[in-house]
Image (cartoon, rainbow, N blue to C red; front, side, top):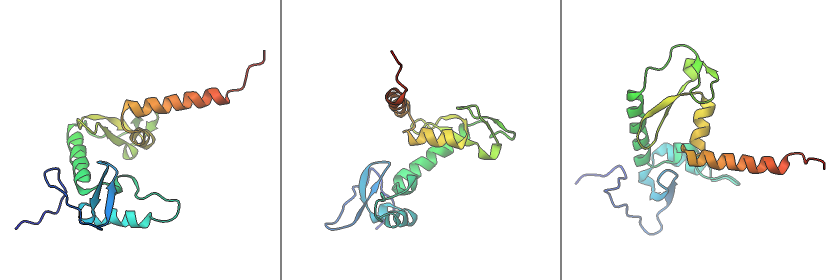
Length: 155
């Protein structure tokens, strides 16, 4: 008999009645404890305090999602040009960035390398969904708020 340690699409996850489940933010599934790493489970349990949501970033991804992400990032890294050894402009905002602070940006579906970004740009794009739809929604929001709070012109 082989023990299944990882959750996979081929494996039908059976949740026992009353069994505690945890939410994977990446695949949006509620899965049993064995589908998460010990460190992830620690994050769940640490965040159960008042006014806190569970989890922190990809620390609340199930093992399958985390593995897929890691493999995709490796593919992107292998297809990327070498990391610059000198300060260069961020491919997104143009701010001069030291090589040790540059981050690899990649497409999470095709695993294609997109550029070397500063942490702010890479984090911002990721937090907005890593696609143009998320960025468009942010622009619409900022335009709406700007109109609301712009000083009114006198007639």
